[in-house]
Image (cartoon, rainbow, N blue to C red):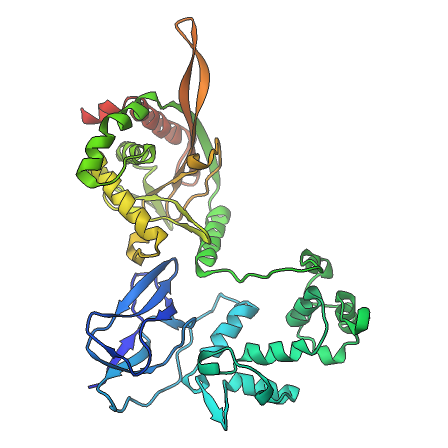
Amino acid sequence: MVTEVIMPKAGMDMREGQIIKWRKKEGDYVEAGEVLLEIMTDKVNMEVEAETSGYLLKILYEEGAKVPVITTIAYIGDKGEDIPEIKEKAEIPSEQEKPSVENELIQEESRTVSEAIVETGKVRATPSARRIARERNIDLTKIKGTGPKGRIQRADVESYKEDLFKITPLAKRISEIEGINLETIEGSGHDGKILKEDVIKALGGKGVGSFEDYDVLDETGTEIIPMSNVRKIIAERMTESYFSAPTFTLNIEVNMRKAIKLREDVKDIILKETGKKATINDIILLTTSRALMKHPFINSSLSGDNIILHKYVNLAFAIGLEDGLLTPVIKDAHEMSLSEIVASAKDLQERALNRKLTPDELQGSTFTVSNLGMFGITYFNPIINPPNTAILGVSAIVDKLVKIDEEITTIPVMNLSLTLDHRVIDGVIGAKFLQELKYLLENPLSMLI
């Protein structure tokens, strides 16, 4: 019996997934529970397991394709078994999205099953590649395909045609943006090389934007990097936060001497119990969760005209990656001991760095902590992570000269920065929360009372 493999819906907000890697190829046998492929959902990579045993009869979407959730992406069944009639692939809704040139290329290459592979003689090419070849009078037999099994894709045809022209990177980019046929342009550079000015001249000095804007692309060589899924999500959420919420930031200095001593006193015990090393950040997460329970407006969300006061703490903390950041969530942090905070935070951190988190582990936060202290940052202004109404920025611990009982001495001082949504939280409420947090960090044993 043929079984469909579908793009899973791994979280309430998940709309699409991108196929990162097929672990099996067509014709391979797969056991139920065996990893079949890897996908990316917004910020995390996930392994998708086969729900039944059988042979992978057909892969409908290649690696790199973005597919809506609950869409069939492959079929598993007995060897030689017929698969259902393949219908046109679903397209991802994009009412408010304007895909970039690079995304359009990716989507078009994976849009329909009919675009998978078309053979004529020995040439394997997608229909979009063939269409462009016809329009530009290009012989496909002269092009080397970069797709699966040597398939010629749209990008291969365009690259082949553009290789016939000598053109600067900036002129090439402008021609792509403006849709200019390079055959119509006479290059004024050395040996007929097409320059930016030649493309602008061909446009009659008019384009979709100001040509001064193009100057950000260096004539001598520029790398254009499409935004990753992670970067896109961060851009959307931070833009939403920055332009929707009137915010302000409060700062306070904390004497970390007792917090540092607490870590020294318990680190060996916690290491023995959990196998993980306790850090100052773990102590900050613990004290923050306790302070939030006493100041519910800091631990709130805004929904329309309603303020939602959470009676629990789902504490998110920022983890920096090469292409962005993730904010995994410690659920019910207010009920955890320090050793439980350490174990949970380290587990989430390790899996975040390996892209093994599930979408649900990145959702449902009521408050966020962002720590840049390990990079020597002494002050920064964090941006709220929606739908939270506040975020805590943690800076480096530095020695500060102070006068105590007529003596000059040094103490380890850390700056905390609390950014607040002024629609929900006023300065006095934020200040009282910071005072509470300062007290707990300077007197950590009080949490045992």
